[in-house]
Length: 223
Length: 216
Image (cartoon, rainbow over all chains, first blue to last red; front, side):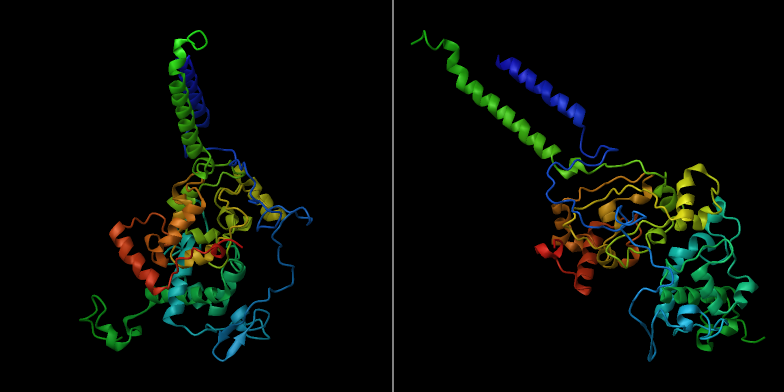
């Protein structure tokens, strides 16, 4: 009697383990939540379905022609808001369609470092670490990727580079919604640094640092 | 008396006791093992509408997490990218591939791609992505090595004790902010301790364990 019971119990355990499997085994079905525990509440979470709106989205897209209310950015004394017609927002001289020649933000080491980081995230996959347009995606079928050292691009103004990042150009998509305004300027400054690194001459290096350049210590500073 | 209780009943109490012990023991073991998120949630790997491979994009191509999940540093919520993000490359790469049909449709019409959310915490838990990644908690701590997952599956249990393990001793889990998105980085325990202790001190990382740190 006892023996039969234990045998039955053992078989039951084996059956349960056989059906339920072990921890960490892959499951295609969502986890079962036995006790609701207010785990799922009728509130809206981002990027979920919500039938109230015609497009069934809980996250609302920005209304066309509007600008989100945000804090301004301090540029020296001035505070620039996103709705303002200011070179910082548009890359163009206020009241005109001409691009600004140089960055409207102060170029600091901090900005440059930020630009390097943001460049590595967003631009590097196609334009490559050095900006030569030979990023890894070009091995997988990206056909036309601009070489940032092209004279055409070196000659473009900072404002135009900013505008290309914001709105895209040719086959390149727009990155205005992915990269903050200040970060776009940071990237422009870093791209300029990349270009200088390739096209610069020893004379561009300050005299007191020139001696430290590898292979140039013996060369006279002339030309 | 022997007519009422036959001899085998002498051992009956012992047998019942052993039986009850075996039953109670296996039931406890079974419940502890199975009725917990470590069994229920870990391993969840739903079939996604588009067979996107993190292994190819984040692993082989080395694209930064933030190329697509661009709001993770700014928002409590780490966003699913818009379909136009995919098309930044896939307007040329695999341009006419049928697997990307939904993406192209979505970019054209604005109809969302029905991605299936895998990692969920209860709605009364207010986890903030930005706060964690900006203070050196790597993606890998909660999501595992997503860059080696062809299809994403849940690796960690996301129980309350899972969160608290880290909150009780943040020094064991935080790293330099520049390494937060480097999921393959291996840190030796000694180095982790040294680095973690320094960051906890320098950034004034608090060991938040009060209820309202996470629950509101």
